[in-house]
Length: 109
RNA sequence: UGAGCGGACUGCGCGGUCGCGGCGCAAAGCAAUUUGCGAUGAGGAAAGUCCGGGCAUCACAGGGCAGGGCGCCUGAUAACGUCAGGUGAAGGCGACUUCAAGACCAGUGCAACAGAAAUAGACCGCUCUUCGGGAACAGGCAUUGCCCCCGGGGAGUAAGGGUGGAAAGGGGAGGUAAGAGCUCACCGACGGCGUGGUAACAUGCCGUGCCAUGUAAACUCCGUCCGAUGCAAGUUUGGGGCUUCCGCACAUGGGCUGCCCGUCCGCGGAAGUCUGUGAAUAACGCUCGAGCCCCGCGGCGACGCGUGGGCCUAGAUAAAUGAUCGCGCUCGACAGAACCCGGCUUACAGGUCCGCUCAGAUG
RNA sequence: GCAGAGAUGUCUGAGAGGCUUAAGGAGCGCGAUUGGAAAUCGCGUGACGGUGGUGAAUCGUCCGGAGGUUCGAAUCCUCUUCUCUGCG
Image 1 (cartoon, rainbow, N blue to C red):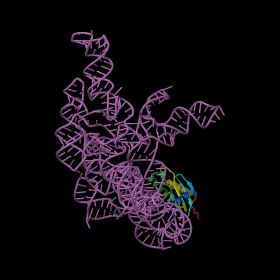
Image 2 (image 1 turned 90 degrees about the horizontal axis):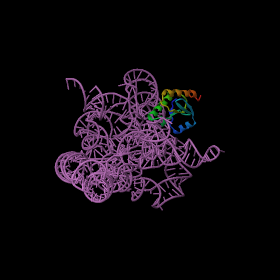
Image 3 (image 1 turned 180 degrees about the vertical axis):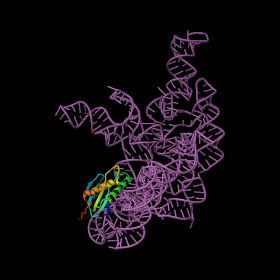
Image 4 (image 1 turned 90 degrees about the vertical axis):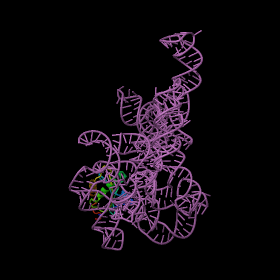
């Protein structure tokens, strides 16, 4: 399933308020059921300068894309602050959360 | 060979698979859009936002005050606080480097502490003179006195004095009671004239014994420049228009710049009606431009000129460059466009090239 | 993105060229008061480094950091780091 980018500030705050939060070692995964499949990453100024922040965003997007397919949700990815960020760790944690929350199963069934 | 100085350039590369941004072409669809193919996609600093412009709005961009920037000279430029060439000063054996480098005899302020004294003077000292006292030491004139010693007064002096950032040009010779630009030569300073240079300035001669501290990144003066606000500027579609009524205001209000002159004339609310379904939104501004590369000509150079040639090289808007595999090497620093240019400043692993200096060795 | 403000002991917060004032308040420590406490009153109290039976004491450096101007800088100027505020 293709995931579009979640752009509206109102929707992001709605997901943050009403969505379910799951935590892993490297990131927090916030989601709520939705008609459209959409995703956003949250990387504020505390993560470093712009080069560092862009790097985190790329890694998170690619890790999410490379993970197992899931049904339509509004998803927010929030990394934990660390010295180094790696693609492998992000991907492993996202896979783990998807499996644990059974998001891979078809909700409509 | 070693040490060093200046300048220019570069900023991991190649290939496969999957993925991202906008663009072009083709196909499907009423349309939103989807699919396929193709080329393309961060920097030398994109950074800090420290200057200068373009552009846009305010009012037609006007006058004055206030405020702010700059400050050796000449040039370059759209402009600059930038750059180039030169002058002066300081540092270095040298190549070369550094410098906010106008004016404190227009005025005002400040100069703590120390020191006798801080922009002005006489505390000590030195010299002459005069008054009083002393005979204890050494020596002389030859004797109730003097030189001498102690204390006080008067006059001269600015050589010397543990200060200080700064003490009335410097050190030397003559001169003198002691001294002093008092006199002399040299150096410095100031003034005049000449010469060279567009100029800053340099230099030669003559004269003046020398009217005199520092600070303007203190106020200030002189010269010169600046209207303000910044693309979240602003424009268009549009929830906005039209009609009616009500409230504020006729300059005593509001906007334009902090103030004055000057100048412009609206602002807010309610009801009805038309239309609309995204509203911190959508489109434009938004990238072809003081553009980049090469060649020729002019200039020491910054740079300029050329109907000489070639190129099109990001335009996103929660904001695009990643993942993985293989190969190579010296294992990769600082760091991500946000309206666009010209600079400055700051950060930075390394690597390459050119020119030059000093020391040593050899020929 | 654009525009602006600030940084001073543990905290707060004056000082805006002159001997070292780093004022003052809070907090903390000690003492007085009390049967005991609170409140009140008095005294003390910054960091780092050096010398010191390492005890009393004493000297030097420090006003976010680095340079410069000045005889002299917390104060003036430049660069830099961090924090905060406003702007459709």
